[in-house]
Amino acid sequence: MKKKLATVWLGGCSGCHMSLLDIDERILEVAKLADIVKCPIVDGKPFPEVDIALVEGSVTSDEHYEEILHIRKQAKVLVALGDCAVMTNITGMRNYFPLQEVMAAAYTHSPSNDGEGMWPNHAALLKLHGKVLPLQSVVTVDVVVPGCPPSADTIFYVLYELLNDRMPDLSTAQKLKYG
Amino acid sequence: MPIITVYINGQKILTESGVTILEVCKANNIPMLTLCHLKGLHDIGACRLCLVEIEGVNRLLSGCTTQVADNMIIRTDTDRIKRYQRITVELFFAERNHVCAVCVANGNCELQQAGYAVGLDHIRYPFLYPECNVDTSHPWFVMDHNRCIMCTRCVRVCTQVEGAGNWGVMNRGHDVRIISDFNTPWGESITCTDCGKCVHACPTGAIWPKAVAQGQLTKYPEMIGELVEKRKLLQ
Image (cartoon, helix red, strand yellow):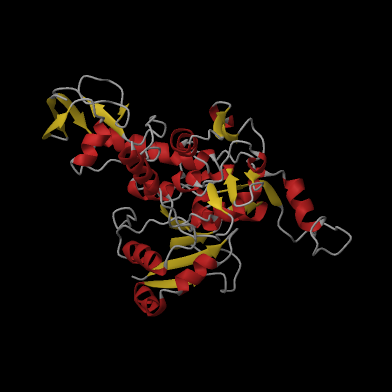
């Protein structure tokens, strides 16, 4: 029975997904053991029930918050992929400042803005939280993979262990890396 | 110095008295995690990573500031020590704003190495996200308090080796900060000799030369110990 695998991209830069693609032809070995049923380029809104969910990025807004709660319900194993998901990393650098100051810096004082200092507030846009949170402060995370991004070897190691019903241990495998 | 016997992790070791547990471990190739220790500087036991268990003593003691005594039974590898070491490194990360991805010291950082050594994969404590200054007033060097772990290696090297006494420590607890002179910009210091020893002594990316980019910082902390040894030859 093939496992179901899904990846999702919250508050991050997609670099971890790029690194996932860097596993190159080893994706065929993953494909033997699992179907990738959802990823940022797969259509279809609701996150399906899966065995393994790789979550890139931190929780920065109301949309991410609801999404990660939903993913937690749908996924048997939730993997926090990359430094943003594990310890907020660059996305958390705005946590030292009040949100108003951050918005003003981006949309009012930035030399590249439209000159009027309009803040985007369309109803369809996500609403930023005051503080960016790592995944484990919102939901229970089963596996953490730090790194900015984690190397392709590390991601493949984690995936391969999980697909073979083993728990990856990055410390013993000497694959820990931050930044 | 009289020769005494100590037992470290069950291994019988003969050593001179008057030396620290850390020195004995180093001499006998027993691994010991350190951060605030730097050869050539006085040890102060600030980082609490070199913790040891000593039979008959309830609390953990720092190996770098505890001297050996005859028939001392020491353990450096228990689960209790490993647990505390991991907690300590996690608190270093949670206390300031360590963003490895944008740091000059990425890949060449003693805090990262300590994290790998204790198997740190995530931080279980809430991040404090304190607002920290970045002092760029010095013509060549930057002091970034976001990345400082308060090991005070810069303070000690400035006082004990350079003899300038530019760096000091201000406040307590979360608010503790390294200061230049009386908390004035580094570039306006009247004591700093621009020697750059603190740059090499710093274990993280807190003090770095302006000429380097992300992940490009190379440091040579061994230089401090070598300098101290060379000076002894001149005396």
